[in-house]
Length: 203
Image (tube, rainbow, N blue to C red):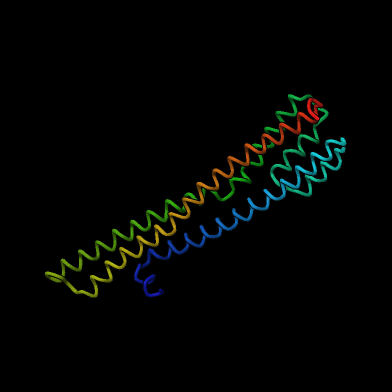
């Protein structure tokens, strides 16, 4: 395995780095979204129960304990619940704009890695083919078989490595983007429901 990777040449170094970073981002984001989903379910159960009893202090404490983007937005609405509804709505929207980047954290770099890995693999393919044609040109009809095999190996290994990093990175990038969009929609729905409860229009 090591010899196969080594045959890819120097381009395998940045590809290896891209692979490590992509793996870290994917694992970190999967854990993050799992945790906030679990916390938000508990948070909304607690908030709905507390709002039914008009226990705003417990609601605020539950938000602090949860510490998720949704919790921050709900706490903002709770803290300014005595203000005019239009003002509260503006404050909530501003807070949502503030917390959304937390959901999007590291997703853009993952998409960048997907593109870079593809291009690095293509670069390795091109340099490998250049070497292969150089061997053929310098050695007559077939050239040195060992050098020719090494050049072809470089082209193929870098292509495979680039695609092996790019494909899962792109898949998870698109998955995380859809996850963020879903979280935003759910956040808007929860906050709207809570504001209606605070105004007394629904119980």
